[in-house]
Image 1 (cartoon, protein in one colour):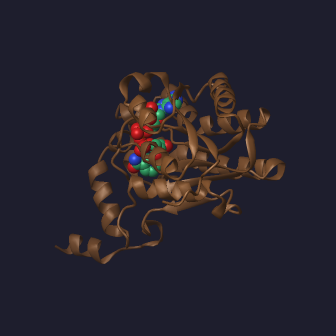
Image 2 (tube, protein in one colour):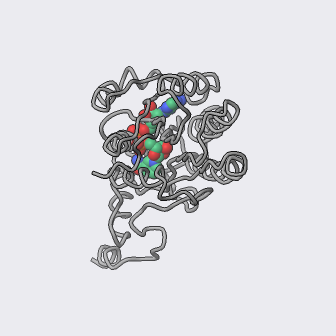
Image 3 (cartoon, protein in one colour):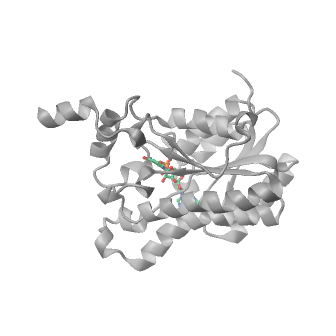
Length: 269
Ligand SMILES: NC(=O)c1ccc[n+]([C@@H]2O[C@H](COP(=O)([O-])OP(=O)(O)OC[C@H]3O[C@@H](n4cnc5c(N)ncnc54)[C@H](O)[C@@H]3O)[C@@H](O)[C@H]2O)c1
């Protein structure tokens, strides 16, 4: 295994259990020689298996609620002091919508929950970036990646207010990517990932159907969490130094396909 991330230091958020995209990213980054702190919301640490992952990756976990700037400050400061240097890579793998979780239709949103969805799933990305910049916690050519979904561009009726959150997330990657690039040459991108069988993914109504549909539509089939982890390693590495402010489709070709033979066959059957 090549050591693409040897000598690099980072933070990986959002690993809940072995299905989480962040879990696979942590395993791959570890294989590639990267050192990192794991983080998740305090409640997820009680419910999930993150300590198991920490043991496997020879690291530790620092709890942080991504909606709280003071938690980001603590996480960033403790990581740089424990690891003995500034950050080279950060994965934001955080998403949750109380409306989606509780089955509230997009035309009947609870607005307190809507604000929560946006805060957890999108503004938290800005909160991390702004805090890191103020603390001057990232090395030059560092790389920050957030995980998005195609519902930011196209309607998937059951994705509800998470679609709005993803549109904001992608916009933050562009907006902050500009400023962080100019100030410190830090890269900021989002990966628009195929439907993936995780706790967050399967919480969306009709998930199995749109997972199968996307799989049939995509010339390469759906990208797995492990594929996504490989892509994250590439984006954290020095091989992608000039890639920033992008929303990068990692979807087996779904986003460029109008219709596929597999879908036609299914409909005409
Ligand atoms: N699964 C999919 O189909 C899919 C597709 C595209 C993008 N994504 C995105 O990938 C990311 C990771 O999701 P996943 O599919 O691995 O599911 P997951 O449920 O394993 O991960 C979501 C994580 O967000 C964390 N989280 C929620 N609220 C938080 C808070 N206040 N502070 C800190 N952490 C908090 C959860 O504890 C959990 O670990 C999300 O942004 C999700 O929207 C998922």
